Length: 453
Image: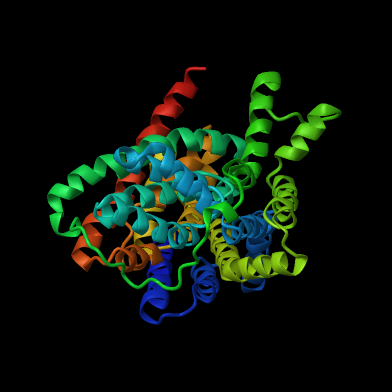
């Protein structure tokens, strides 16, 4: 019965979002209430479950996401992101443009949301494609693959950070192992897949001399932008702090966090905390991309305010996903999954991936799919001794699969690159699914290697 209620709940959520065009956050809350009633929860406790789900999910994530968006916007508005992309492209030359685009997109994707990264990089990719006389999609595929992989595997991006937090996984370890998982996924779904796409979808690889209409593009003079090194440092500072903390723990404490750190351990632990890392990085960004560039505080504040507006609804959707997750747990769906899986030969990591895939196909949102999948597999973690880092990455991989018409990324890719529906399914949907499958394979390999130690 719990599974029937869950399926009906997901169907209702999909209906409200796709057919009724109801706001995703509102749809999640309504679905959570109805699913809770269907699961037989005490009506008086439903509100507490929703409150708990939203509060526990948005705890430190509000600062991580909010400050992350502010940093990304400051780097973008100062021309720093343009400098990163242009420098790499100049260094690599025309023959290795795809690799340059992958690296630039990977770096920028770590500090920007997918949609923002796509909007930022697309004009640059178009300009480079025109200059090099190559099809837009030839460079667009590796760009999209790199941006997408960072959203699925690398904190401090919303989905992997939210899933890792829900599962109790170490954020720094998720970041380090996520990079290992993301690199082959990007290379296969990017440059390698491009060669196959050219053969199977040749109509999409026509060299065009005009740019599709995709909104106003801000132009920068290269000599007026921040230096390459300062732009990269500002974009990656939060990731650097978290990586340093994780490497320190691996070297001096065998990868285990100290229960009550003191002295230098406490300082490193503080700097490696995602929330503290974001606060320090934002203060640095205000200086490096603001005051250091001769900007006034009023200009910096405008960028910060614009960034907050762009993520307000995202935060609510993440909170709604947390509410839905909590209802599933309190209503007994998690225990039902646990009881079934205790007698199943299916790997819990594969299960986590599969649940995320089903939710991704149904709902479109990678974040909602990841958060809901995390709630469903959480009861398995302790009973089957599953590595939470590997589970978080597996769910991240599953949450990227089979993007189609209920995903905003599908439409952005279609419109920006002036593709037909058939071309978009053949390129974008396949690209996302390749990242998902390669990601799962890499997680299974890593999990097997870690199991030997």
